[in-house]
Length: 349
Image (cartoon, rainbow, N blue to C red; front, side, top):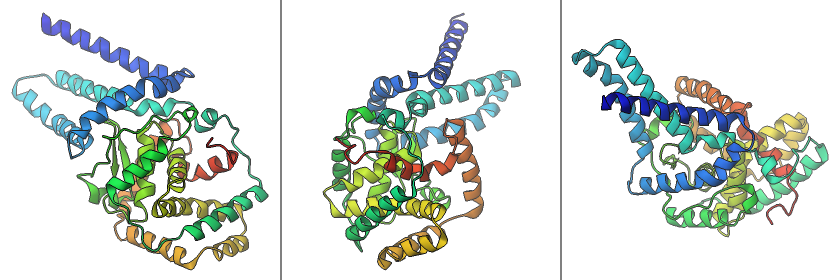
């Protein structure tokens, strides 16, 4: 009788939690309430637990759950459990994982977008304004150039976190904690094979950074993944904060990583918005050492890329983003330029 009562209580709690996720998804303002009032507490607790372990708890959890889902039917059948019982049990496990994913971090997908929180209207394309940005950005990129970027991991974390702590509260990012450190992945070669430079582990609020990153990529990528940990779900917004935080650093190497990290998105936007002649003319204004560094970076990752796995990952991740209110899918990464152009020059204050 007690087992039966616990089963009903467990399912009632599960259903209520599932309903709450749909509430956050569809009721305006509730997602922002979660991001500002609930997530900071959950994130602090989960990431504190994760900090006690040098490895990724998120990956351990996923691997253990997958093994359990595969092995459980054989164990249950040996105990004469019916297939219906097995199916219901496995569905329940998956639903609890679904709830944990969203309540642990995923509800941040349903918060107000960047422009609403910043109190600005997304800018429409104006050629002159874009060219002004392009000229100023290119000057800064060229001036910041560094052939070698090296910042120790402790110094990098301290520098990036100190800038994040100064971001005005209206943007809705929580403050980074001293005990939050990026984790290394068990499956790093697999992530390199599909072009993943880092990711956010939602089950224990852990950021992960690919340990094969080139030194010039490390500050920008770490700042991007930390933005996710601080409550940012949009990839474009994570790129925006990575860029802004890096270029506001006092460390010259971190500043250059910020400008260099934005360069691929500037290239995509410039090629799409300007004529071929104008694009080539702009490219000639970028220091040749930087162009070479960009080509070398692309060749470095091309050597590690697996086309079949990469295509599969692109399809799955595109679907994942679109199902979580990011309709542009992976194109969302390149929309960072629109965010930069939409803000006034004194927006940081």
